Image (cartoon, rainbow, N blue to C red; front, side):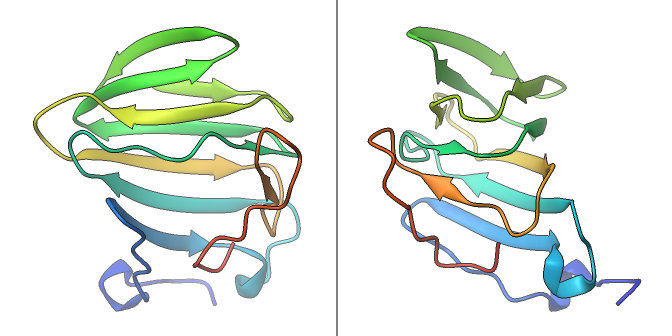
Length: 125
């Protein structure tokens, strides 16, 4: 498929996270995935890592990137650059929803816990 209407894509929420897979291997891509996520105030992703690179563009809200023993604050307009294999967590520290678009250098996107176990996600990756 070449054109998606985001309003028509299935949304797959997990507690505090609304997720849309905008493009992936199911759309004929071989090495790229694009996700849109909204994280509710006070919540965040579980600590995890991917075996591919990830770039997150923050569209709205503010938060904290926990990576490499550091806690880095960010806000709308920030870009988070996440190397492959690096454990990280994204937490909404603000009062408004945290809105982001993430691009991955792989499809499907494999996700792992810090212990290296596969983290099954409830959406198409």
